[in-house]
Amino acid sequence: MKSLLTSAALWITFVVGLSAAAASGAVLDGTAKNLATYGGIALSLVAGSRIARKEPVKSFLSSRPVLWFLFLLNGAVAAFCAVAVDGTQGLMAAVGMGSVSLGAGFGLLPMRRGKPQPERV
Image (cartoon, rainbow, N blue to C red):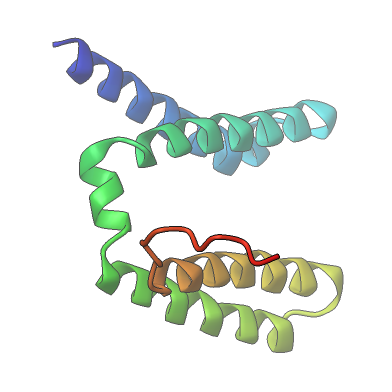
């Protein structure tokens, strides 16, 4: 019961954070808009990272087909943003999507599991 309530609270917090980040421009102006947007982004990042560590989502995100999808799609979007979007916004979008693509790519690399080799003198 405790796990169900914790999961529900995390998902609600995640959705509230995304809503605040996406919809604050329609309701607020100026500094309040920026504060709500950045606060919503931070809230959704914290809640989303906590959700991603829980078991059903963690095993799904670490599966090879999902990692390949994230690697290829985000790499293509990064290349598209670098070419199609002008200025700093395009550069930052390309860097952000490229970092997600690289993270998924590193997840695809085989892990070496063995005894550590003794150091040679």
